[in-house]
Length: 124
Image 1 (cartoon, rainbow, N blue to C red):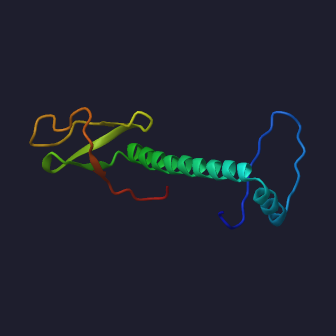
Image 2: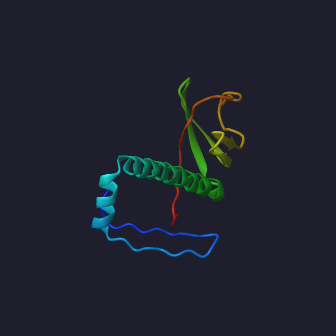
């Protein structure tokens, strides 16, 4: 299991009392229950996925707000193109681009998998 100090924030709907449990006691309780251990591992993996998506979303939001030019690569066309990223929808995997600067007419088609490269500066 992951080692190190853990902290948590809790918001309750009703007045609640909390119990402080030492790390050793917590480990003993978990060791006695395979089901509890499995649930905690599952929750931990889910939290890691949420954090990963959140980091992606933060970076993509910075990209949209910066109005920086992005370089686009398409596997079916040689070379790269440039555009501005206007909006991002991670859930639906949508990247809304301004008009793409290219020698090809409408090089990006619906359903294309594109690689996006951009340089952002400043504090996240």
